[in-house]
Length: 504
Ligand code: AHR
Image (cartoon, rainbow, N blue to C red; front, side):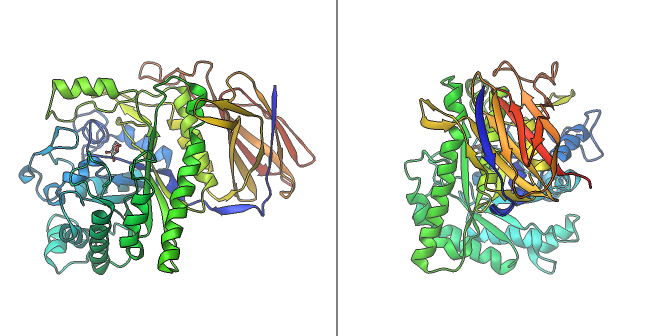
């Protein structure tokens, strides 16, 4: 058995955890909206056509915000198509996914859904085919009290009170050649600045996210952030980061090491924000919105076939990755990395929420079930709120194809209500780990619960027929000895150690 240790001290704080890191994302893509959250005629649909079984699972995840309506989709989207009487809303060709958008669910319906889900709406505007004028108009429509063209339209469409959307994305992945209205960093920085300025003039209370690179492998990564922020630094609050992972090479050790470059990605973008801050002699700090992250590769071949067979179809089953156990471990290590960067990562969205690269799956007229990745997200969202602590990890390491000296133990800790929760992964493929956690400054604590997610087969998946094949169970409760917890962490496992103060 391998040995690792963690030192936690109440004074080694990183930052308060912003609960918005447990955000998610729903795009008008595939069966996310139609056949996912919305399926009128389903036995469990409510009076507005929203599936109550899906809503219950979303509420269980405790998702504080949902990014919407795209994604690539938003770069060709006209927000006006999605409001007003349903029977006069146009059907449009969506050039992002080569499908047809009916606009049956639009801004009002989705806003109502977020209320039912206990979430806030994070609304993305189109800076691909459109510009500052339409950006100004949608803020007026959503947030102005009334007495102007667009706010009065909202009232006429049934919403007397403003929607008060606080968080807005200034476009999506504008550095990507696949994007409708793709731009250079300078072009994007300029248009983002002007859109942001006008949006804030309508509603000064909003927060704005500028598009960073689509991923850290983009040839323009780094220079994109620097150049576009040089144009819009004072007008925006966050820069977006996106990253998807794959294990197409089928090398689990390398796959599980990817949080190492995720950490570097985050620190690099934070440094570039600070470099622009320095250049501008600004007092303002830009933080990070990691508003698309997940594993995405299982469905790629299937998607090619679907697109060939039914170009311009409606609600096609696109991006329906079926996640296995190792994907859940990777999702867990992403969440650990966000907690360890809580000083800069203030918003994050697992992409996406239902059916499309999602923790929740549905069958048309059938059931819904949790994919493997549902569980680390659930646990982090439930127990990862409070103040993130710097966990001093001492661990054996391994070398793999993508990285050297990868610690077998990946860990993060959050303190709340006098107790602490430690999230940790044993990346070792074969050996359990004897973990010692030194809780020197906490006073008497006891391990109230050890939640364990493990499966002997890294490729094990959950399906509608076998929905709990990969599901959490109770782990070793170990022993407390003079302020030190000793506990066994199985090979390849996700662990949540919930330490509570001892009752006097
Ligand atoms: O989430 C799927 C797609 O991935 C989004 O539409 C896009 O922003 C990203 O490339």
